[in-house]
Length: 91
Image (cartoon, one colour):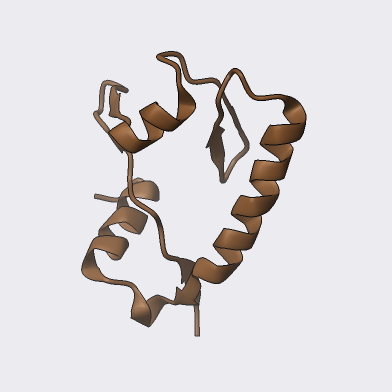
């Protein structure tokens, strides 16, 4: 049985590259300019006022959260499936 990660939500982007960042994320990052790091599978936005140690600790917490969010694909809701479909670039 294949598995998926149950997401917190989604960030929607237009074809022109504009994206709506949810208020919850903007407020927690305390900045209008959101620095990020990425690789081929993951993007991490972080508070520019946080130290590297705080960001690394936060990433460890997220790793643990993701482990708890792994569910069989059959348990994803229709909205979760839409989020995953959009994340894969297939509308």
